[in-house]
Structure formats: C-alpha cells, structure tokens
Amino acid sequence: MKKTSFVLALLPACLGLVACAVSNTPNPVRYTLTPSAPTSTAAAPAVPFARIAVPAYIDTPQIVTRNSENTVVLNETRIWAEPLARAIQRAIPIQVAQKLCGKKIKNVEKVSVFIDRLDGTLDGKVLISAQIVVSRLTETEIKSESFLFSKNISAGTIDEVIYDMSEDPYATYAQAISAAVAALAQAIADNLCE
Image (cartoon, rainbow, N blue to C red):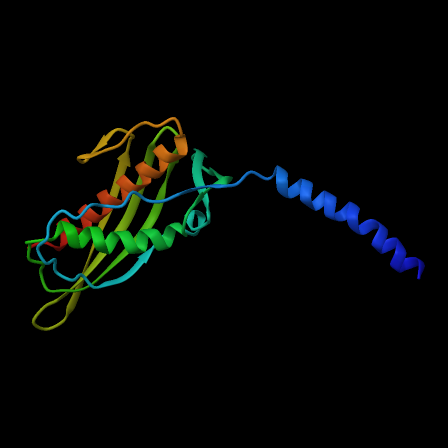
C-alpha cells in the first residue's frame, strides 16, 4: 500500500518534469530540396536508374554541415522534411528526364549513381562528388562506362539557378544542395546523349 501511494505521489512531479522538457524543446524547422520547374512539355525518354546511392552520413533527418575536412555537424532543430536520400532519389530521375527532352539517348541499359560527398558550409558553399556508371547495350554485350563528377557550388547564381542569400543560412544551404543535385542531373543527362 505504501509503494502505491508513494508512486501516485511522485506521478504529478514526473509529469511536470516531462511537460517542462517538452515545452523547452523548440519545434524543428523542416527544409526541402528546391523543386525543379518543368522545362518542356515534350515527352522525355525514360532513363532506367538501377541505383542512386548517397553516403550514410547525410542520410539522416538532421541537416548535416561540414565544419572541417574531417568533421560534420548535425543540427537537431534544422531537419529535412523527408529523408534526403529519398528526395535525391526522386529528384534526379525527374531532372534528368527534363534535361533530355527532345534528345536521343544511346542504347542505355541502366544508370547507377554513387554520390561520395554532398555537404558544405552554411554560407552556401557545397561540394558534390559522384561516380556515374552507364551500362549500354551493344550488338554483342552490355558495356559499362564510368564517369567521375565533382563540382563546387556557391550561393548566388549557379547554372542559371538563381536564389537569394536569405537571413536563414539553412535555407541558403538547402538551396545550394538543390543546385548541386541539379548539376549532377545535368552531368548525367550530358553523358546519356548521343
């Protein structure tokens, strides 16, 4: 009986502590990749993507920034609205198809993309590097070609993508990540064209 009354007496105090902890935790701000606007109404060729892989260190809900060559920072209150890997895996095929509108592709059997690095600093500087593997069907076999892609992106004007240097550095960072993904999609499209 004493144990029950003791637990019941502690229950309001425990609930009060939980309420204080929850009320002091700020609501996270959620960011998305910048959606790409359709560039043409013409039918785009279908590109068979076998795999689009991202490094595990950026496949987290938290936005990851780099503060030195060997250290990254995860921000608990600035998060992606959806897993970044999923957003990239959806964005790249759409953007590649848009960039290929009206162009012919050379006997592509499948395309694989392995992103090695996609991060940067809050001032809008992002580095993306990836390996693009294109498998083509020849008369006798499937041959694979591998291309390396690396690009530094800075806030401002990037390959005709213009965005603001906002007061929120994480919004600027999300825009720079979006521009980096768009630059990778352009490189993939360029390697697929005849």
